[in-house]
Each structure stands twice: as C-alpha cells, then as structure tokens.
Amino acid sequence: MMRIHKSLISSILFGSIVWLAAMAVAQAQTPTVQIKHVRVLGDTVRVEWSTQTPADVTVVGFIVESQIGFIGGAKAVLSENAGPTANSIDLKFTPRNVPPSVGLTKITTRFTAPNPTTVTFTREFALNTNAFQGGVASGGQPADLPVVQISSAVEDVVDARPDHFTVKWVANSPSPFRIDSYEVRGLITYGFKQPPPHPPESLKTDTASLDGAQRQANLVVSDAPNGGHAQRIRVEVTAHFHRITQGPTVRIVETKATGTF
Image (cartoon, rainbow, N blue to C red; front, side, top):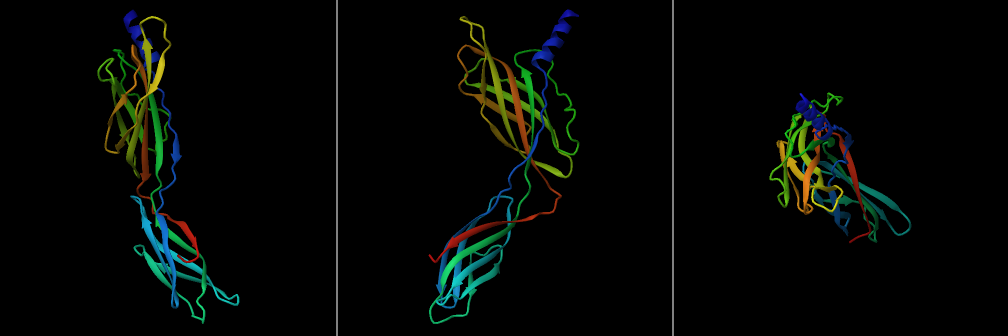
C-alpha cells in the first residue's frame, strides 16, 4: 500500500496536468499589391500593378483611382473597377491641349480570407518514471472550440545527445471548425547527480510545425547540458483552426503612389 501511495504522490507532483487554453484571433493574411507604373498616354492614365496572394486568400476585385490636375487649376478624380485577375487598367479623361499631371493613385484591393484562430494547451510530465501519465479530460474548456489533449511525452533515448522527445496528443474539433496546423514546443528541466551541487536547468526544445492531420511531434534539445538528466517536460501544443461554415467577409487593403513613373 505504501508503494501505491508514493506512486500516486509522485504522479501528482511530477506528472501533474496543467491545462491552459487561450484563444487569440490572429491577423488575417492580406494580398500584397505593388503599383508598377503610372503613365499618361493620350487621353488615358494607365496604371499597372502586381499582386501576391497568400494561400487561402481570394481577391474579389480592385478599385483604381487617380487624381489628375490641369494647367489653370482644374482637377478630376478618375476611378474604375477591375476584375480579380487584372494587373492594369486605362482611366479615361477628357483631353486638353496640355497633358495633365498625376497626383495620388490608389488601388483598393477587395479580398476574402479565413479568420484564423489559435487555442493553446499545456501539460507537464515527469520523465523516466513508471507513474501513470495517461490523458485526463480538460475540464472547463469551451465545448464549442477545438480541444487538444496531450496524452504522453517521453525521452526517446535516456541521456542521449542531442536529446530527443516524442509527444503525442488527441484532438477533437467540433463542427464548424477545422484544425489547419499545429505548433509544438517543450521546456525541459534537467537535474544533476554528480558533485559539485548544481541547480536544475530549464532549456527549450525546438518548435515543430505540423499539418492538422498529425497527432505526434518529435522535439529536440540540441544543447543539453553535460551531466544533466531530463527530469520533467512541459509541453505546449498550439492548434491553428478556422470556422469553415462561416460566409466569407470581404476586406480591403489600400496601395498608394504619387506621380508618374
């Protein structure tokens, strides 16, 4: 009975579970538009641009505006809409004897993008112990968000250099969410047995980036201390997810330039 009692205490002290869930809305990706040329050609202002579109971003269209001025103080704002695949447009104006000067040119890009969101879970494990370290339900988490349960973390080869650890988890992503990717990292506490007395050291592992279908990560500490023995690991798993049934919201980003070039 005493052995069981000590095992339970060891499990509570060193294999205790610390679940932290924090949802944070990340900034949505946006397309990058660069105005390449603005020229006056006869009775048009020709505007040319290039567009770089990140994955999961869809360009809906462009609104192109140019401010022109004539000798004598007359001014006009030229504006036209362009389709999502356009990279140039001709803005027409009523010609005069002297070509106009071009002031501010602005391209407003209309696009849609998912609203990426993250939720992070952490758990501490005792390493090199026979204490039970199975998964425990993450009480108190919102029922309508994805839940990640970190089920195990082990040192692959004890005291090997560099130090390798395998982390496993299970995930539940309720409708209408989809987990797109994971970031997994660890904090290792090393203890020392040989004299002179040496306080414990904590070192971070590398960060593993995985797609949303994965349920296992391999973490590495490349600079583990000499004579140190991995005693505990604090694992952090961040799931990146988005709502898949929400209708797209059209956003805008503006690009500006001045003069002709």
